[in-house]
Amino acid sequence: MKFLKKHPVWISIPIIILIVYLLSPFFLRLIGENLVYQDPIEPAETILVLSGGAPGRVMEAADLYRKGLSKKIILTKQEYPIGYYILKERGLKIPIEEDIEMMVLDYFKVPRQDIEVIPQTCNSTFSEATLAIPYLLKRGIKKAIIVTSKFHSKRAMKIFTKLSEGKIRFIISPSKYDTFDPKIWWKERIYAKDVFIEYQKLIDFYIALLRKKLL
Image 1 (cartoon, one colour):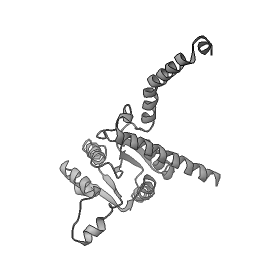
Image 2: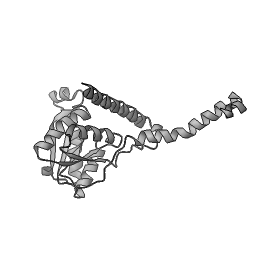
Image 3: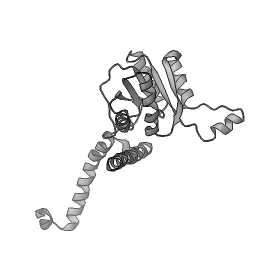
Image 4: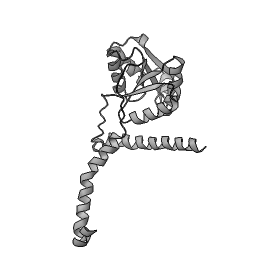
């Protein structure tokens, strides 16, 4: 207030704008870094690769497998792309994410007997968790490494931890091949879009939890 009394408004406003501008990268970095979560890596019974983000996620899974952190890789399946079945009926089978992932794992010489694919398709992280958790429990798995993208890692951790109810210990390992940079995400349109959508989905998740508690 003393500053405003001593200086005309036309001087103080540019200074305030300058301060906001200088501090904005700091807050923007916090926004990006808040989405990224990573556990200390350790051996587990399986590596669970969440759908989306191919080939980066499955490349990370192959690295973890080759380091001896697990002897099994389990893949989830995205919903098939629009028009997939129409083309299939006409005799054209287009490659889907699962095909790309298998190609990558073959390239890195991961034996087919060490790879499993959850047969049902999913269209969200929540549906992915509702499919994957029973699948893992049925096989007696108590500890699994989850591989996903950096910006998706925190939400994946929260959803899988919540839905597993402590029956499975999940170790989150964002793919190092994911080029998302939380320190400069706002400079790239594609990453800005990812951040905006991810926060929207995080808010939806928190609202769902709140509703469940209120019911």
